[in-house]
Length: 411
Ligand code: HSE
Image (cartoon, rainbow, N blue to C red; front, side, top):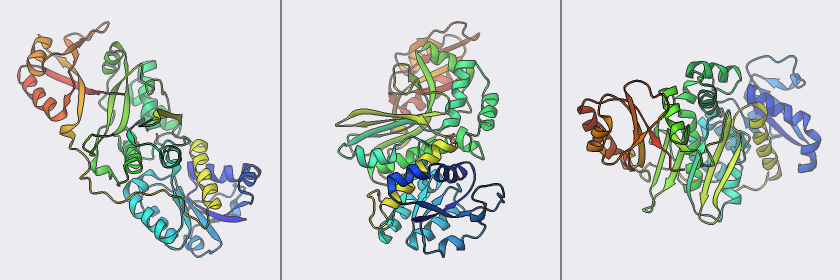
């Protein structure tokens, strides 16, 4: 029997406790011994839980219990998760977490402590909910030189954009629905401003390229400025708007990493990933494109990934799984001004295409049915963002009111 503790009994934590209880026999068959939930840490009372007798409000009950070999951290946030996880690793307990904020902020340090203490620190559920992605990247694709990872990494924003695209729903109504369905973060700003997707692409970039990428190094845009008009112009351009997290290795070894809404061509594998689903495309030199798809949020999908890590930790109590990257200083990341994309631009004014051609060179006008009165939209050629920004200023100076601009994804 292996004793484990679960810190947090919210959406994911209760799912972990549920699977460990309802799938006991299935897990026993895989591990060859029982996984026993000895403590559940939460400040709230859960008298009706079948595990009601295991609840504690005191972290010391876990850290001081030498029988507990694996600790699950599903509290979310950094305080007190960071301190608790660090203490668990330092006291020789393996840790499993779904906490992307924690891994994105402190992953390199916690991995180094786990290595030093010869225990495991696993976080499959931190990216893509129930989709296997960390283990496939660190094990199954290890023979590849990965040169790009791009994905729809946030279920809430994908749900909102899908409702805008398919049902013509307004942004606020779609967000409310996502919150009611339980996909959104406690503070949905982390979803709609792109920070949640940023944490996830930081984790994947760190894993793919071996150096920690901190969220503050990454240019991040959310979806709050996307309008139904942009959605319709995208449709006329055979594309859909998706919030994309993307990292690409350039020929000089540096990486280009960004989180932003993008036009995704309908023919892209990522274009049909809808609602709360996530999709992650990994481009490897041997495999070509490999795409992972599934539920990126929600209680049981996320708990499924956590429990898989628990089983893996229980199977490797005396050995360390190789999952590691070193600390990073951001010097391997190109400035956003150098990042190359074509751009969609929506403008109010007269003679827009003539003025746009003067400012940007050749552009492609997007013709959509029932264009809003006095508006024109076009797509520029590919150019570095810094060049685009300079040209946009010249364009605006020529009496053009720019309503929005969105990157065209090369996906
Ligand atoms: N708020 C997150 C999402 C939850 O919507 O994807 C899963 O990380």
